Length: 398
Ligand SMILES: *Cc1c(COP(=O)(O)O)cnc(C)c1O
Image 1 (cartoon, helix red, strand yellow):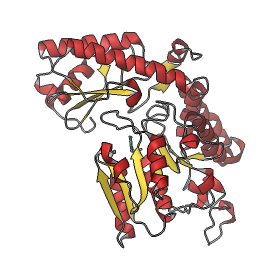
Image 2 (cartoon, helix red, strand yellow; image 1 turned 180 degrees about the horizontal axis):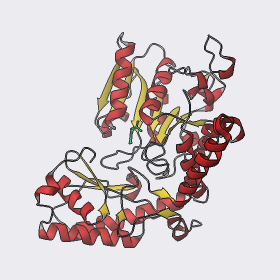
Image 3 (cartoon, protein in one colour; image 1 turned 135 degrees about the vertical axis):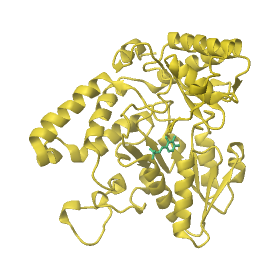
C-alpha cells in the first residue's frame, strides 16, 4: 500500500458532524477546488477574457484531463476526452458503435442498467427506425444472450442499485467472438475500482466525473474510443469542436483526429477547473490501494449492519470482488429510514423501490465512519425512529 488515505482525507472539505457515504452520487469538495475555481474566475475569465482559450489552455483541457482520468481506467494516452453529460456520451458511443457493425440492428443491455442509458438507447433506435431495437435481459443473462443478431453490447460495469459488477473482460471477449462491439459505462467504476480498458479490449467507454472523481455537481462526462477504432468511428453528434479545423469555419464537416472528434461544443471551463483540483489528488493515488480499502470498508459495514439490523436485507454481492464500491440494503421503508439517517448526519441515498445505498470512498471515508453509520442505523431501527411523517415526504431528488 503506497497511498496515504489520512493525507487524502485532509484534502477534502467534509462538513462537521457529517458521515458522508454518498460520494458514489456526488463526490465532496476537494479543498483546493475552491481556490482553483476562484482563480479561474478572477484571473482567467476576469482578466484574460477571450484570450483564456489560448493563454490559459482552456481549449486543450478536455484532452489533458482525459489523459489523467485515462490512467485510472487503463486507457491509452490520447483516447479519452471530456465534455457534455454522461447521457450524451452514451448516445454518442452507441451511435458510433452501431454504425461500425453493418447488417446488425440490436443493442443488448440489461435490466439493471441505469434508466438514462436505456432511454438514450431507446431514443437512438427510434431515430434510426428500420428494425433497430434495444433488447434487455436480466444482468446474469447477458453473456448467454450475445448472439449473431447483436451489434452492440451496452452495459454499466457496476449496477447502480445493487453494486453487482459485470466481468468486463469475459463479456467483451464473448461479444467480440460473436462479432459485436461493446460500450461500457464506467459511472460507478472510474475512481471506484481498477479498470483496464486496454487489457479487456473494450471498444467504447463512457463515464462521469461528479461521482467518484469529485468534479462537483454538473461536472463533465468522458468518452473513450479504443485506438483501433479512433479513425473509423463517425461522430453522430458532429459539433464544431469535433471538427478537424473548427476555426476554418468550413461549411462541410470533417471529423477531427482520433478522440478529438468526440468533442461536441464549448467545454465547461469552470467545472474543469474543479476537476483539475480533484485530479491533483487522484494523481497521488493507486487504484489497487483504493480497491483494497473500499472492499475492507464495505465488508465491515456489511458485518456491522447484519449483526445490528436483521430486518435489513443485503442487496449487494457479499464477496468484495463481485461488487463495486458501494453496499446496498433493502427494506420496504427504505426511503423513510434513509431520511432518518440523513437527519442524523449520516448521508447515503435511496433508490426506488426499496434500496438504501451507501458508497465507500477510501479517499475520505474511514473505519470510524463505518462504525458511526452502523451505530446510527442500529439506533434508528431499534427505536423505529424512521416512522415519522416528515421522513415519509418524498423530495424531488432521492
Ligand atoms: C449517474 C449515471 C448517469 C447520469 O447521467 P447524466 O447525463 O450525467 O445525468 C447515467 N448513467 C449511469 C450508469 C449513471 O450511473
